Image: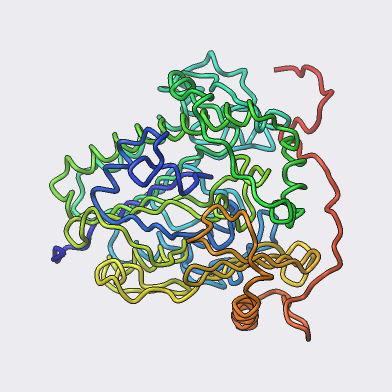
Length: 494
């Protein structure tokens, strides 16, 4: 039984970490002893999803408990301003009114960049900076420049982007000077503060998001020759969503060789092993406190990464590699240990998880996850995900129900149907073989979308609004930093 005192609540998130990267949950190649500690400490949610699998929408769903249709962030470029006005107070602000000491550290990727999310302590380590002023204002950059002047020359302290986005790299500084180590050290300071009120801590790592650049020795922990090959599906499945071809080209990943794929996968696991060691230090600090058992820890990622599956890289699809996420929940005073929960779970549930634990559930668009973890029921019947502007060519959506997954692609009006129990790698669409299931899930998607607060309708008189197929124009994304916008720009005065 839970203590009468509200628990500490600690959210730990990574960026772009696939669901299948934890050793004790089935990845025989991974080295994750501390993720495994979390698995042993509580409940692993084995069917957890990001309902809009890209950075900004996922983060606003976590902070608000609302689906992207309400936050109005359906891609990283959505005009979703005034989120709190539409959704209600952010999670940190909500918990602060309940007596929590709130602190948030790491990547937030909000718009505006330094939006007030309600944390009493709020320190940033973002990925990329458009100006020198933004760069010098980054909390990690300030720490690095004060501690290690030898690295002042770096334009991008987390690894090279642009054409190097999916090229195996080595972090330019030792592990002790990386953003992961800075973030872990700051988290330990906050956890170890001697205060009487419970804390809500939010730790947000950038890793293993590209560039995939683990520091020494994590860069050589895994042998590329031993990495599993990526998933290859039926050509009609792998090519159905042309947005993935556009994304590959945009991030310079359209022609990655099998050898480079294995190298990237090895360094991706190396990045996760580094994060795992950081999380071990955090767990040690939590467990050294007298209120360790009354500390709710939730680990999750914002979305996954195809890592070559279906010929794709990056995220922004409803293949399992991109939209299914790891989610581990532990609270020794109130939840069982060493359990698996197979119910459908989403990032929108985290707001309700925290508010339920703090005293009074405020679920918003989420499911009562804490109750489900305690009682094993009720579970979600189904889950809808969406990406892109509703009613436009880029729009796509997913329905998960029982063993089935339905995917709708407005570009071409294409439909995919998978049984994720019999075909967990989603290699073959069963749309033609199961027309009744296809129609039922399509109808459910229409019903849910009709009830959502969308900026424009995703439906027309025929149902889901379709467009004649057109390939997306291939363009490069040139992710330079600090005022550099293209190749060919020579030296500048420092």
